[in-house]
Image (cartoon, rainbow, N blue to C red):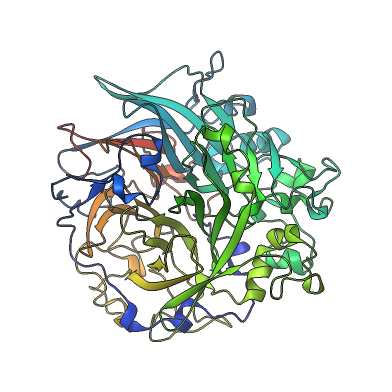
Length: 637
């Protein structure tokens, strides 16, 4: 989820074409109606079943149609699911993660200390994955925490600002590892748990890959350029066939105070004076880029974590490139190499793919510890004839030379945006989550929206997407020309989101049935069902093009039928995000982020409660929700 701070959002001033410049109406595919049926396939057991592997020979037909009663769109302060389903909160912001001897209770007035927050679940849950311990009965949830609303985090919000508040805000970022299990009375969090862990903006981490040790990665605190404190703005995620979790650093630049007039590198990444108002630099000097200009270069990476080992030092994988990473979806080539698809959630930015050099080996993380350090990073170019190319971001290939500011591969990766500009990659409308269909091998990416389309000097409209103010967004999909490591592909618009009841001509005819806009979270489950989660901003919900959409939602889609049905409606002011299932598909976990969000996002503590008191009647709290079918059946059947 990209907050509307307009820092990283609008920094691409290159002349590269946009998706609208090269799209053709004949290639638009519209989702229609309501989800009626799907003949699907399910992977065999084990962790690999949860990964977007392309080994469709393991699939076994379910033999039943998918069907549930569509949830009506209602303005409620609750989680609504179809009849026959139950949704329960399992772990909230401020709940203890379960470290033995360190399980402080959440204080409803927000007075937990920084030390207490460091062992409690962080704020604003986002991407998430389930890692089995005992199949579908017990496992670990790795949960991202994207950002903080300091109006809720502290008793008096930001009326005063102190070093303790900065430390608490940093402790509320990052990742939580919690253990959950099914019991006769439903799912519960296991307390304590030997696996429980908090990873925050102050956790020591390693930097690996081609950019490790680069001159631009060195600081006074880390003259080697190989160690860094913390991860932040953890948005979407990924998970690997060898059992690790990938957490992605999105709008990291928001946290840094920059000079009045940043250099060209700083401008391209959105660095500016004051950042986005987090004010960490006032008490933590490393977030003052005027004093430590290389510190921002140490963020914007994909971070690998072994959830099974609480002592493991997280690793920032620089071979995957630096970006405002939304997610990192992992799939496998036919010969067993890892392919990672990544979107960069900012206006007019790019879609990336990484292909590992080596094959995945049996033996878990220990056997694949360096796999993501070696391979080729590509950026996507969408051609007007419905084909596309993956352009390699490789030093000394094409314009990526020392003469153009790229002295080595580390420089290419640190300045991945500038490298993509030079290569002529296609500027996109906020590429967010990616997903790979394990059966068809088609790849999807949500393009949430771009309200700057056609404004000022931004690219204008065309026949492919006539929205000068693209408020509704769309989903694009492509098929690689061969295996997933191919350097060419064919593409189409899977859906242009909109509301056909509105008079705007560009919204007519796109969706007949359950409407949605601002698609964000995206996942194809092992059967091939596409799950879509929305992130309409609080200032937009229920207004304008979203007049009929007062709350955010989650929908299920059968791509083979082009049919869709609403599965869930979230509480007021929230984003619906983070989706994962147990291997038997009988339990689903989703996240509700920032219920009660007010337009300011850093409001006084009472303002969010004017909109929401979910889930407990007091301060609104982001939370993980577990969804089951009342008859114990597979979700969606």
